Image (cartoon, rainbow, N blue to C red; front, side, top):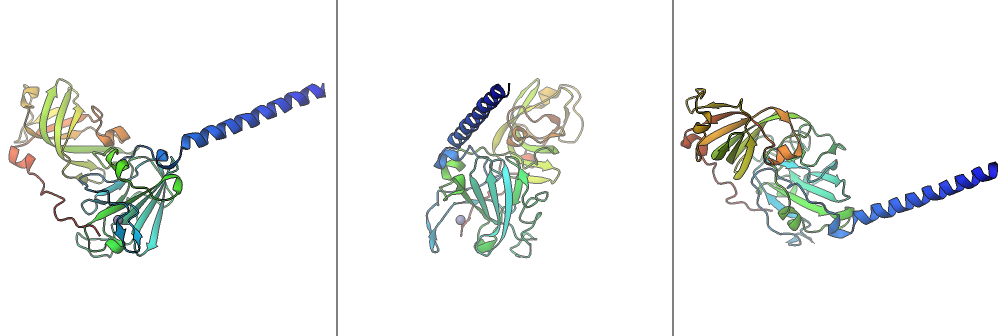
Length: 318
Ligand SMILES: [Zn+2]
């Protein structure tokens, strides 16, 4: 009965069209408008960073289109949300620059990335992976939220000024909005690790609390491998899972065999080494009990506290 079949097909066709329309409408609603399109971000710089709401301030001919995030030279810049990156290397003002096209539809600009090969302001580095951009990163690559994408620097018209990331937020790829509240609400990473890679980390600080299966450390410095990327001035309490097989070493390097837990006193300076694990966003964030201890090396107070020189004094953005 061809008539029937045709009718059934017709109805099916209409249902499909209706479904597509409904789906389309739902998709555009969830995208939202303006600032609503910006999801909660991962803070774009790992480690100590300072910024003010300098959006709209007079700079040159036009207002400042972002916020300047002051950070140590070569501090790791990370993807604030998942998306796709694009290098931009031909602007004399922006210097080494990166676009991140976020999955939410918001576009982010990372400007003045590193262009130096030494610790000085040599300007001899090109806007390439390993200098301006993360070593593994390729132009056009898809990145995960929190994935390292570049290094803070002073390229472009920031040359010779305090290293900083000029960061812009463009909801739905349109005009820039102030990044300030998004930065204030952002989640800060503890470690600069590449999601999906196996990593280990060393967290240096003071013991805050110990339980049979966990160790909370007031972390001052962190370092992770591969890469050996250091994060200074962390100042965060991190709760690690401490499996029973965790080895504890005294400040002389000898293995503590008896009364292991008793050796882990509150206020004791220590370095916690983590077990090799897959880098995930919770691990990079240092979420409670995500990192697991492999060994804990107790330190004399002088060596472990050895406060880093206060970073952040004398920063002057350009
Ligand atoms: Zn700026």
